[in-house]
Figure 1: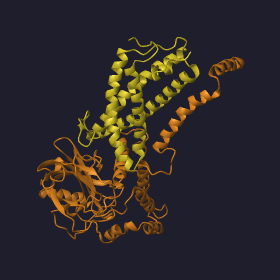
Figure 2: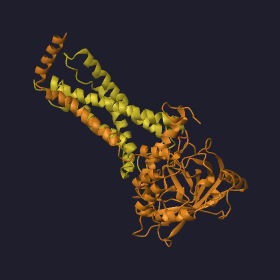
Figure 3: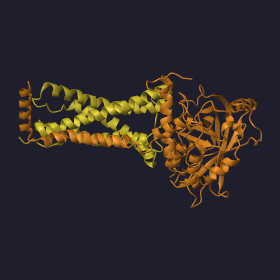
Figure 4: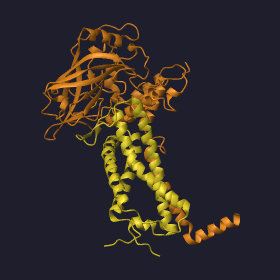
Length: 362
Length: 181
């Protein structure tokens, strides 16, 4: 048996004319496979990838909450429409900015990965919108109730998450580690100044919501205009403090029962030199603003059954006439949201290996 | 003008090498874009969709060429197992180059995403929005891509085996070389 095998191998080798041929046959596919694995990040554990960002967010949340968004997990669905003023048409070909009525499916949420967190635990609220144009293209935007972001790059965001990771003993972030992070990242100063004075609002309806990132409007001639935007509420600001842990959803139901809630979409145009790739820096207050239209919200439903549940508010889902800027946070948001969306829909589907498949231990 | 009996017709060879480059690029773009959080992410996603639809259209064309012009016969002395492997792997490759773009298209439809091939060109949804269907199709897309990659590696290894060891003209029939006997 052994001699037969070696005999046929010898015949094969004679015909092959040397081992190098087998080396090429095995080596070329192996090299291609290695390059593929490297591209996927499997051979580079130190590289920042979208799944690693979501992993860290899950660690910071203290648990995986199956079916929920990994960030801004606690929220409610809203529906309504956007009525364009037409004032932005010279700057963008997007149908959302024409005069007319665009259906909206949106979501309000509070920052953080715990869907059961008390509404008053964080000052940051968010508004996410999906606007569907008559031509079927969509504009999705996720906005926050602060004018600037804490960090400017995906790497710094990841380091911020690591610094915020709760200590196993105390259940709270290590103050020394946080202090070290802020010391190493002076660009966080404007955000920290905001956070010092920010109070958790008693209502989603009274907040401004900022785009944080810059985008580009594209006009009919193809010229690009760098912009940021914010939603400015018609509801007056209040000093009220919410009672209990879940006052935001109840407040929204109550207000909507009395009539629609409105915001104005105010679009700010950059002047030459204004940073488009740095979400930590506000633009000067005197920049030209255009009222692009009115958002009118008419209804709300819980997020586990509402129309917003299966929507990924990826800020790079944009219609013709709006494009991403050079802000490095935008592709990272898009990639990380996609990773979160895949995990929570997989849990919804009860696919094997997902968190929903595990037994609840508490 | 009769072609030599031992070669693929030129449209088959052209489609093969064009699609080889496109599919290999696509496999790298796919795993790269899912991981990347850099500015590459956005443009890789924007290349991935039109390239996928182009592969789908070319795969249909290629299937038509294949059915009209059967490939040259395999060498008569090729062992039965290798003959069977060649048959199965080629039809698996055809099935995957048709299935992957369709699953990707269906997956984006189920996710409720507009299927944008450019800033302004949108394909219609081929499935209603459904988060559970999205998750299943998204995983299927990834696993079919792994299967396509592994099948491609086997195909590459087999082609090199024919060219370097057997030197039986099979590699030449697609490269366009006449075998040296």
